[in-house]
Image 1 (cartoon, rainbow, N blue to C red):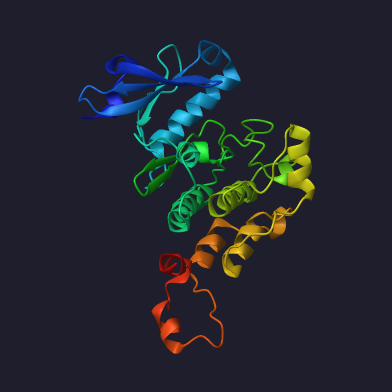
Image 2: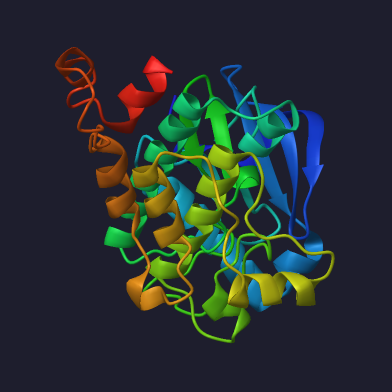
Length: 285
């Protein structure tokens, strides 16, 4: 079935999944019975030019970007009273939902981060800044993790979708300071999420926006018990200066590089983990 030809009326609504600031999201069924998440922009969004353009961009990006670690758009209409976006539905929900039930194992956390890093590299290579990398925008299907929600994405065609976008818990220091977003700010948000998944808590907390802003701008992340190589790359992702901040590519390289072994370790132990990188190290543990 060619979903691209469908209109909103072709989908049967089953239940409301969530209410956002800009849209309502429903669990719906396509004509062939396939479950989808159906986003319908609020009336005030459809009637406001700037907000309507952001929704239209989200529809366009969701339908045209094709990567195994990005949520796939199935059908949509960018504007007007019939505007909507149908995307993949994930029974398991989001990474945020999963974390409410307890932390991920380190091996699964690394797998998740590896996949999202690849999604970010794909976007950045195309001049797209996601601007809202966080667990609630990561969707889960078994051991498959996908980055979704392009509602505030920054593109070459739309370089200023919002003055400041993203969750304060994951936002880069330069954005708090009034700077502009770029691949480096996405990398920082990814670094906050990496710390959270691997350590079990966020690196920076605060009760108010002012406290969070100060923490991101001035505080260092607390010490971890991670292997040195992994601790180092996570801290480099959280560098205050975007010019020296690590990239998703550097993260992938770090987790695929074997952790140096102590000089007095038996040869048998060295061979056992050779070339497995941090994935192999955590499997052993």
